[in-house]
Image (cartoon, rainbow, N blue to C red):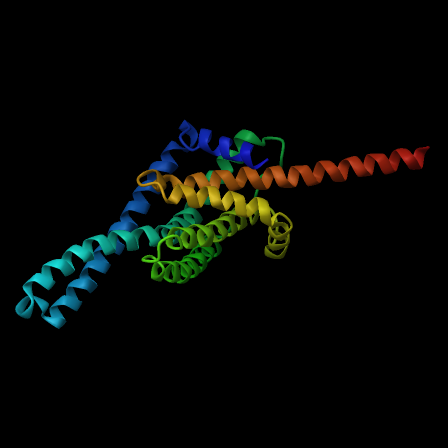
Length: 243
């Protein structure tokens, strides 16, 4: 079920139907990364100016700028899951409508989340992701723990967020939470796939669209299985009663 969903997402993310949304998603992700980069650079420049390291310790000043460049790059990696969630929340309904219409034409279409609700979900997850990844960032210099902490935390967070966005088109929040809990292992594994994608430079720019397509397929496959089982049980019960 999960493997089929992963392959379906990998096949469709670059399809003509989604290509326009993919490019817009990449553009928005890059724009947000640039804004964050400029903000962090400005903060670091203010810090150096206030402490006036260049006047007393020019070597330390140069070394600090080197570390700042590397440190800002690392910080952007840890901030990417939060940025990805914001972008996914913005484009998910457009992606879901295309996937549902193309691959599940016999099913009733999902209902788009109100823009405010979708944005609120993205901002909520972004805040939680920032908090969790800040803790993971503090573990950056501990070998063997840094990447593991980053991967596990984001596998859970990304799996939860993307699944809730996809399932929220068809059911209320409490039902979404219940369904996610029933299939927590599958959702976590799907989140691990998305988290692994985040670790790949350049390719991680497609994370919002890939994650959205993956979770639309996963939600459909999970609920289709439940519906089919319910239909089989009802058929069997009816056969017994007729007998």
